[in-house]
Image (cartoon, rainbow, N blue to C red; front, side, top):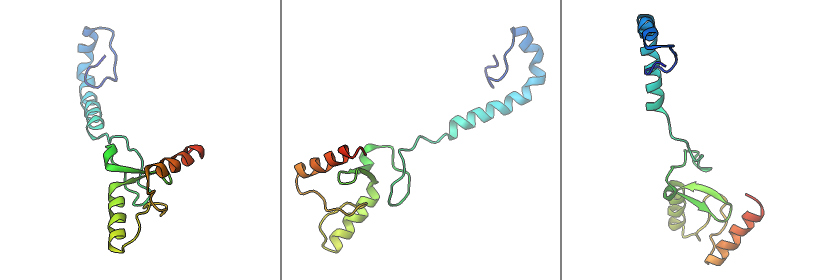
Length: 120
């Protein structure tokens, strides 16, 4: 098997050496394509923020799961919502569904269980 382009198989080393002049140019092109694919491959996305439609960061600490609607929102949208609420003296709410934030942990767990029962 050609070690550079991995697209041609040979029966022996002698066969590979005889075929090298014909194969060398296409081999270099294919090896460059493989290298570019590995180099420029984007990491898998965890989805998009439903508010700003930007890709969600891969790190779990850079996005927030809203317990009221089971929606994952980026921290930028959470921050913008929090800033708006502070400026307008509003009660904290979900940036996606605008439902009031739970006052206690028990309320948050109850909201989460509603979403579990709804299977979303």
